[in-house]
Image 1 (cartoon, helix red, strand yellow):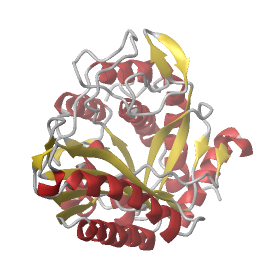
Image 2 (cartoon, rainbow, N blue to C red):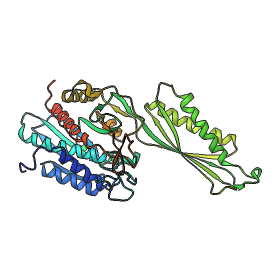
Image 3 (cartoon, rainbow, N blue to C red):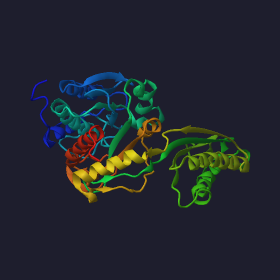
Image 4 (tube, one colour):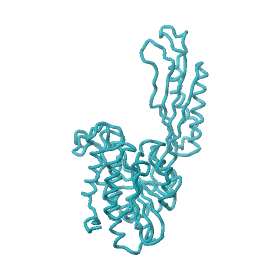
Length: 403
């Protein structure tokens, strides 16, 4: 390794990396160029790099001394199938592919930390432990995505971790401010498809048909009562009917109607309750309207649960870096979901958020806060140095605690 390879990166380095990833987004399990870029950087800085985990995933390993604790830091690499509308100079160069969730920034932040930690490993002989940097593919693909597949391929057997951490940007919150909480922090995410099977017919002779659209419409309304009347009002739960599909033209009663649902919960027992009630509501509606029905229910990400000691460590590190007011240690849980939940189900750890500020753009002009998964979204490069510094400080405290 040369001194140049190990020099401390500044925000400009990470910004260049982030915008490179943004220009060339890759969807889940297609992150070949991104993975190769990350692997080349890690190898140049002295990491032991293992590629090909879950196809395009990789792990960089750095050893400090002998033995000691084992730390995992994870970032995602995949983009979304969205046509970008920001108009920024570094906008996606590929049609219908876009880094609309900030994974380009998460990868760049972890790379910046990786370079700093490699320099520290060379110079500091007081540390003992092993650092595993996990660059994951396909976070956006739901239950069949990258975290589950990496684990199925022996991630934690091959790269043991005593604790794992990950970070995500938080649009609309002050840049660089951290948000976290012990316990349930992000929701489970399930999907259901309810299909009503009737008898088609002429729209002018409904008495000769059995109309599934009426049952579908009634079910949309009946499902609203599940959260409103079956779930404790102090407990978060969501049932969203994202798709209702029936028929092809105005004067034909169709043979079937289909609803597609997104289901979220912050507690396992509430998750089970929602699943049971959705089956019961669908069955009741089918019986009421004289139809057959089917429910295809798919469980996706579990509830993401942060461990107590690991959350306390993250809070302590953030406050050491930026003062007591830089972190909300009792942040409101989110009903969005994250496949890092799978990793936290097998290893203790913590998932936290970093404020992304006013990050929306249109025609290259800032528009204010903008949600992720939006064609006008862009990761805020002002987060990069703060995020990388947090990872470095977390590793420092983990391997060489001061408390």
